[in-house]
Length: 439
Image (cartoon, rainbow, N blue to C red):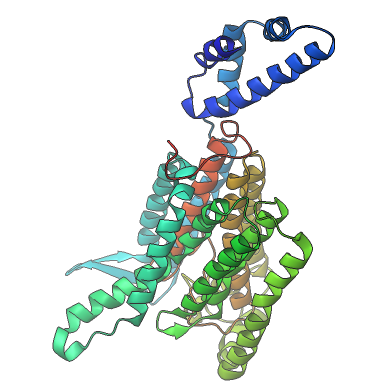
């Protein structure tokens, strides 16, 4: 049997698939051996007969090599590029239409239009997506605890840091403020990292559940402060993704607890503070800006064609207010179509994720796609004037991307992780070893 498996695996060029193939072939041969023994054969003859029944190892290995080679979800890549082109066209159009001419100064005497900058950052995002595709997603999981701790600690230190402008100078202050902002924007990485953290608790009971919940609690406590303001969106988006991942992990019995009571208790623990925070936030900020500025845009928009409000009157037209801009310049129907296209891309990516048989990849991919879904929901809420969270970083994934495009880059990073998961969908078994001592 060992010689048969060795010769078969020699035909499979993709080394990372060897463990899954070996386990599958070995199990099949052992089952056949047991069946032969039950029919009266002695062990040696039963093993020899079971191996012979498997057929030629070279031919079988060649066939398995075709199945288990790395794969690229070409349809998802093409769909992403279509949405990418759409986003670029919209921003170039806006740059030419808006009278106030949004532009960026990249050197002392050189200005670049926002549309050009958006295309640049989009190309960078696509390149980063393809680069992440080349990385094994299990590597992210392997170092998840270390990376998660560093990310949370760095965010806490930067958010607590105070720099005196009088003693340190304006440039130093701006450097630290920029650093604080960048670390805040990197917090989306907690979503794929948390999948790996959960997988490290596989096989544990309530102790593992408590540790998993603590990770969410710490993240939730650190997230609300965004760009110097309190943000409901920042507080909710990532923790909800993590709760979804933990729910799936419990259902998949990574953490061996009573499923229904544990899930209800876990969601209740966070639902009550979330609702209280939203209520307090809405009472504190109200909806005056939305009622006076955003909702008139919707009321004055047509299904198709230009509305009453001018595009120049839309604040953050190129970013959080992009759906308002589309509504008043092209019609509500166009805005709805753009949202539908983005949602379609995310749903397709979610379908691609479910094609993997590896549980770690499934949980990681679903978490990444939920992050994108929540971003769409918050941007729609801002569009309709029911989201007063102006301190948040709401944007429409792939179509806008945060004031300095961090959200745009993050969207492509999430898709890159999904592509990496799909790449190994036939290489990894249902479970893999992600311990640091693993090769």
